[in-house]
Length: 113
Length: 113
Image (cartoon, rainbow over all chains, first blue to last red; front, top):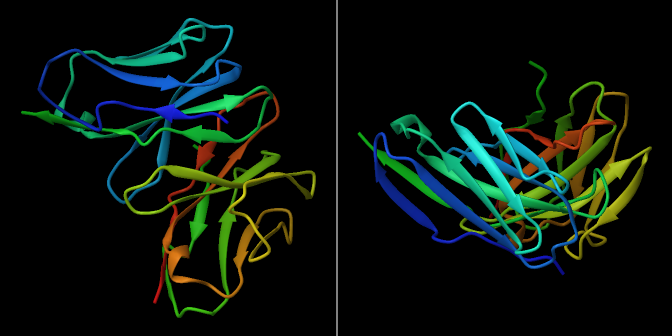
């Protein structure tokens, strides 16, 4: 059974800092991994999807990497801004396309002005 | 930009009552999902639906729950005889053929009293 872990649960950084959010998963036989952003009381906004055959994906100031063999993914945020404050969740998809996502608990990021 | 919509945004019900949560997936998507998030916990998969039938379901999705696509646009989750522990945020998601990214709606907050 896949387990997804995100540590630490919360992170506070000053504005402008580059930061890395970590995600680990127990079953390396994943099909792909998706990163989401969740604002308080709101839905999930997809940020990046990285296929198992890829090493990284980029969108603007965000870069996600994937290392299947070690069961790890990271989300890199460059030049953080107060508007980046939110909870960031990673979710792994097993083996086949369009199957369910298994989520981590998320990392709550606070970017201080 | 197309988006998943959900109604109502907040539903309050008495224990033992039946509720129906409604979702309108993105119009050309063929895969539909329900997830839930109990306050302070991980987002959990409930069920996936494709080609008018359930393709996968979790242990949580027991006989109390059912899903339906009553017409070409709506996707519903019915919870019979609600329990206190059903209180959670319920998210609908959809994905299309050729793209594995799941797009989530804003959620319905269900409160069972």
